[in-house]
Length: 149
Image (tube, rainbow, N blue to C red; front, top):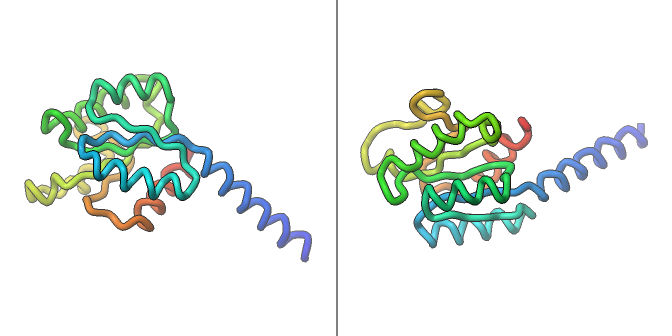
């Protein structure tokens, strides 16, 4: 019985180690959001990269090949987050990278984007959350998405 418990604990520890070496790309033009999110993620051991616009995000995806992407909707243009997610999910090489859309657009427009998250044609992201998000909830959502890899 004691050996079984040790194996379970070791398995959990290995999972934490595996999660902590994952690469996350944050795509947001708000430097304060990027920095605060980066602090939370790096404290959990994630390697964090960032891009402030769609063009730099595409370059980062190709260079870094992140394990997960956190993206805002509104970048240089109001639709950049939607456009980027559609582009990435239509590319065979990148379509399996989980994407978490983290945005305040719902608050600004009144539209509940969470209801259409995952719609392959309109909003092909794997999860959606409104800003501001509590660090614990962000980590929980990230771990859930990464556990599906």
